Length: 238
Image 1 (cartoon, rainbow, N blue to C red):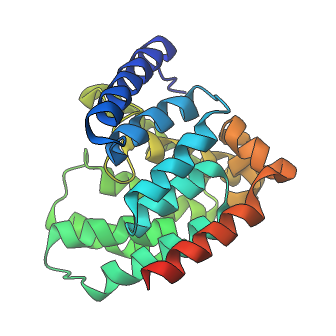
Image 2 (cartoon, rainbow, N blue to C red):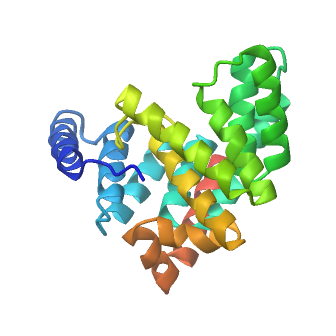
C-alpha cells in the first residue's frame, strides 16, 4: 500500500497557509485553489481542521459539480456527494462525443463517480479502442468500475497498483488541485478493494478508508447542516 509522505504534506500545508495569508492581506480573501491545497493536506494528515477547510473550499468553488461532489465525498457526506456527482455526469453525458478520447475519458470518470459502473466500464473500453496505452488513468478507472460491478478483488488490486505507479512516476502530490486527482483515485481504489473483499457497498467502507473528518460526520457532527447549506447555495444559484 502506497503511503503519502507526511513530512512533505506538512511542508505543503505550511506553504499553502503562507499563501493564504498573503492572498487575504493583498486581495481580502484566500483563493479557492489555495484553500483546496490546505484542505487536502489536512485531510491526508487526518487533522480535524480539514472539515472547516473543505467547507470553505466548497463555498469558494461555486458550481463545479464534480469538484464539489469530491469534497463532499472527502467529508463523508455520501448523499450530497452522489447528488453533485450525478449532476456532473448528466452534463458530461449530454456533451459526450465517443470519437473524442478526452470526452470519453471525462465521461467515463464522471460515470464512475456517479455510481454508473457499467457505463464507466463501457466507456473505458471505448477509450481503449481510441488509445490502448496501458499507463493512462482511464484504464485503471475502467478496472475499478469492473471491480465495483463484479466484486473482483484481483481487478481492484491491479487498478490500485496501477494508480500507485502513476503517482510514483508523476510525483503527484496529495495537494494537487483541479478536480479529482490521482490520490483521490487511489483512495477510491483502496475503498474498492475493501468493498470487494467484504462484499459491502462503497458507503459502508468509505469511513474506514477515510480520515478523521469522515468519522466525525459518522458520529453526527455534520450531515443535516451541510444539506441545508447545500440547498441554500443551489437555490441562490438557480
